[in-house]
Image (cartoon, rainbow, N blue to C red):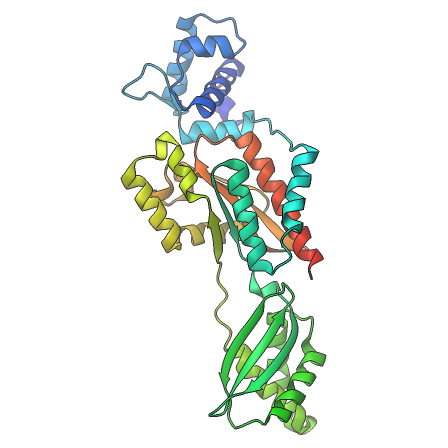
Length: 351
């Protein structure tokens, strides 16, 4: 039995609620009984429809704005709509091909590809597109080189599997000549190329704990230098790229200047958004947060639809759409779902 049935939502009430929400999503205006009579496909009098609307309001599925006789959906109404009444609109083949073409048109590194995807999500939906950068735990080391610097320092240049190049200056215990650093790099490339950064750290730790007499001088030097490099790695954290925030200004319910200012501040400061995305990383499949469901007050008038993307069957990030609660869920959800799958495929192909 559905939640709606538990609360007395019979088929007639569900059809009227569906018609109300679809109208409100399309027009953004409170919906009256005359419109519902026309669009629901039911032969009901206006008085009957008003009675059903009163029941839906008592149950918390709709609300009455003070300025109108019509009604609008609540977060609870949207949730029931999305979970029970919604019929998704699959993307056309040419739309899927267009997404694939955009992904293939960006030959650069993972960060650039993420930027491309966030902009594409924004342009396709006319809302804000958001994509987290791939979790560095699942990015593999392709090659490492060292350049000797002054004062016992060295520059480590690491080429990663997502085509990014990372440079880190490390302080070594003693001076290492260019030849020593070259030999150390050759050893490390042979031992660790193709391994993820957590694997590299674990192997380094294990080898450092081995009996020193089993290591020759080259191994000792190489592992000591590498340990400095990978110990200097920044703490892994979710980072994201967002595009199209200004699209949100076009929705009447979000056009309040103070509300927009606070929302844009949240995008810039990132704390609440990052916590929400971190939850999505640990969840399965499509996640939909409607209004207050996010738990963050700044997002009370916002819906967030996310999907994970994977590399080697491991979730490495999420992408999604941020927009008003009256977004066209039947279209947004398939866009997010397909784009996540295609982004994962693109990243796998670039490994």
